[in-house]
Amino acid sequence: MKTVSELRDALLNGKEPPEKALQLTDKYLQQLAAMGDDFRLPREHLAIKPLLEEFGADPEGFLSFVRSVRDMVPARSLIRKGLQELYRTIEVRLTQQKRRTRIDAAITMAVKKSIIPDVYSSKLAYANRCTAAWALRKKNLLDAHRAMKDHLDTDTRRVLLDEFWANVDAEIAHGELPKP
Image (tube, rainbow, N blue to C red; front, side):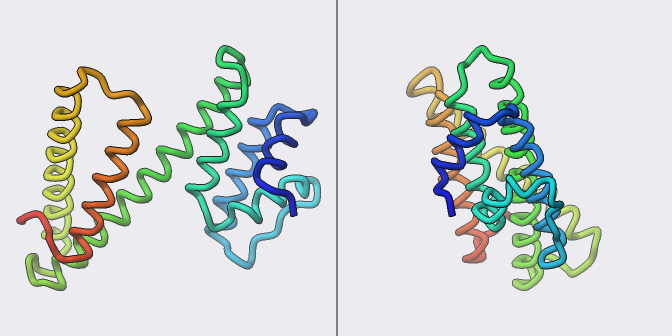
């Protein structure tokens, strides 16, 4: 099996623009996640099978892979623009999936600890309360760092947010939840 760098090089040096193969891979990765063992890759797309094998259970890894391909393409090219659009699409999808998982975990823990009743309207109100509380904490964190530096670059912001959400996830796991 090819290494990730060999897969990236094959995409960059192939006949087709890399964004097409990556869009197709993204489509099939979603189908693979939904269908599991029932998924079958069409014969005409066997060229992307190594990507599916590498990233089938690792959507974050696929996002990093797309970013690495994007970063190897000249900044002002049309291919780079297409790769950036794909990267943002995948990133937003993953962010929303994580958000739903986090809210579900918080609601489950709140019901388990009898913080809220096991009623749909209470769960919905609590989900909104959690979202608002976390948004305020996130804003305060980013504002505090901006006050120190005047500007946050993308990489620093990403690291801060990754740490922030890891802390929120740990709080949920330990039952430290926002008040209803």
